[in-house]
Length: 133
Length: 298
Image (cartoon, rainbow over all chains, first blue to last red; front, side):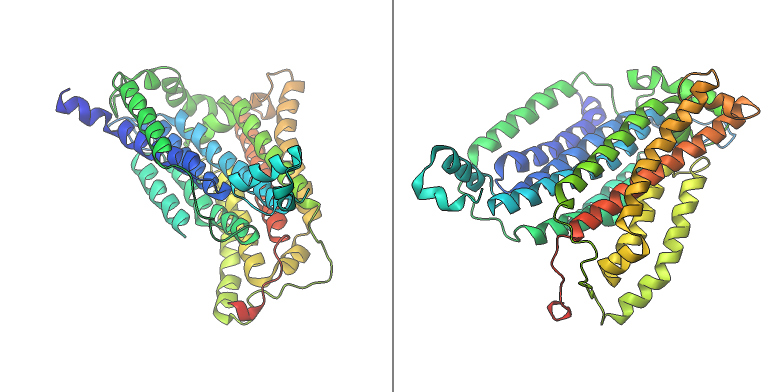
């Protein structure tokens, strides 16, 4: 692969790096709040992917000034600016679910919640105390 | 704190990529709301993660392989900034060329957001509305509203109190400016709603939740929540009744351009109202869970 080719694709690779950092946090952590943080990092990388695809070299922000200019693509901007606000609202929903899980189970660690569920379902005497249902 | 920094850095990057509207939104969100929500969840759950006994190698391998597959997928992608990429040649030229004549406002992003793709945005607003309702359903059963406990937050922090009092007016004014200047520069209902909500959250943080609730009762916020979506869909319905397509505002004014202007202002106002109400009611729901913090703990 030529150097020029690599330079044209480097934005995707950096975004993939950020995306994989978020993905790793989601799959490797048992703490639910950390999973939400990982999802937020992942989400930011998706935003950057869209916006970087809309960039035209030599272009400016898509606001008409009356002069003929090259503009970057306004469509990804529209999609992502609404997605950011939707992201906050859904993050708040996820956090609210976590708060309720904490109330119901007394824990926000995935393993402990699973253990409490198993205890409630199969009547395991040794773990019955941790399930507060 | 770190999430605020992360958000600020991504906002700077977005400005560099010419996405000023998006950067504005990211900065407004990251500067306060997401950090405040994250902190209040942490204070409600656990401050420390329990010891992680999971194997580390398996997730790392999965992530590495996924990353490799994605990098392989990018090899065919158009280069960064390429003006002949498929993304740039499909509908974007129409938006850029026709906005001046069809809509008549300088900010193309606002024109696409509220008019060309108004239906998309209505969907997004409905998602935000639904998420807000769901948060209220999950946490409202445990909210203690007007139960006589006055949370005396930060009573002895004179500097904070004075600075907040000075700041709230300009923040609200700036929110209104962003709301109504969205046609001409970066801004619009989404950003304005968040900025407006931020002013109330600062007020609640410094002067206590009960004081904020008496200035802006939770019941009123829930009214705003529904009114915003109704205003948006109602504007669409009016243009529908005048014999045009749903959310095609051309018939609302004497000329097509004037009609588009009126429609976009109404729709953006609806968006701002819903976003504001969702953020404030979410904050109320989370803060209502927290036990009052005494001054000695600061």
